[in-house]
Amino acid sequence: AWNTVVRRRSASRAAGRVVLLLAPVIAMSLPLMLWNYKLTGSPMLRTQGAECLYIGNEPGFGGLIVSPGWEWTDLETRPLKEGKTLTVEREQYWFDKTLEIVRTRPGEWMALQGMKLLMQVGNYEVSQEIDIYRFRKSSPLLGCWFWPGFGFLLPLAAGGILLAVRGREKRAVQVWLCAAVYLASIMPFQAASRFRLLLVVPMLPFAAMFLVNVADRLRGGQFRVMAATGLALLAAYAAVLPDYTNLAQRNGIDHWLFVGVKRQNSGDIDGA
Image (cartoon, rainbow, N blue to C red):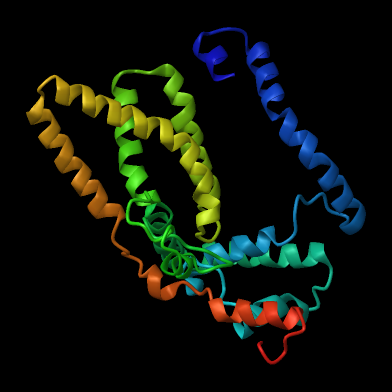
């Protein structure tokens, strides 16, 4: 569809390609929405969407999921205490609470968005279910230093995007625009590595493009340009590698709580 617009072809053909592109998504989503409409009276794609929106915009939560245990239980019972027992009522409750935050605490809300952006593009991996770093410490393979993280990939991809823009690569616009739109779509919610994982797909070709360009320039003896590029990369890594938002301490995943729940569900009460 983008190529159709760029090449100044008919708008109807562009619209047709957009419909064709969205057809698989519609085919998978529509039955779920119709079934939820039958159950709840609202064509929701999933439940807890508005609750996640609230969690991601409540400054008191710092852009992270609420810790499991009594804090999560307290959060879940809030709409019930106000008589919101139906799924649709609870979803509307959290949506209204989110709008109230934006309307009554705009300064705190804006500061939180900046913090979440740092969290989404930073190197630290935030999980909602398991402690990623605990598993890395217990596995010699996962603990190897050479595994590239998100923070390693992002500056390389940004360099590739700059090269594509500078070279006016029209086809590349579709890819980096896809990445930008996806990043914007996850920003309203809480930070989580599983949300940003799909960003890796459009970032990889740009990172590869940048590395190929570096190799070509080195073979061509353009060492001054490479020195400036190296300094820019170091500055980029200084921006994404440090844990500026203290995620290592704030991440609310309680590994042993989940282990206890797992053992309890399997009947091992003493182990739990």
